[in-house]
Length: 198
Image (cartoon, rainbow, N blue to C red):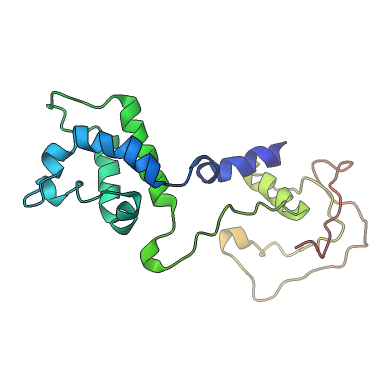
């Protein structure tokens, strides 16, 4: 169960962000921009702060000019825009709607780079060694969780990759296959990994 939760936590935005569509821009975002932003940032000749949002008429236009959206996100999220002294302020739901759309836009591949959308990421299962190391790192443990009879023992006290300390040479002894060594769950284990799976 931990593996499923961990995987979902690592990639939350990938699963929750829908694609930016022309329809969502036209029906959800542009009306909010017209209502709250165009008075100051809709003037073709002299937009305030040099930001003209009126020139963005579609989702494709927004993708072509992605640079301004980071600034828009910062200003809307920090409640700096629209200016707090303004009479008409967007509701928190309207702000969240604009922020969600900008975050979705930012997650898409940049068309200027000519990259294709890779689609949804393929989640692969951690190998038992990766799972063991992940749990060790999360809890700051020194010992393995499960028994790994194929793991080579390193007896050199100067061998400390985590501390950036490596000796000129190290000694690796041979452990009899299946020999027990100190672990947290000596009677538990995970099935072996298929060598051809990945």
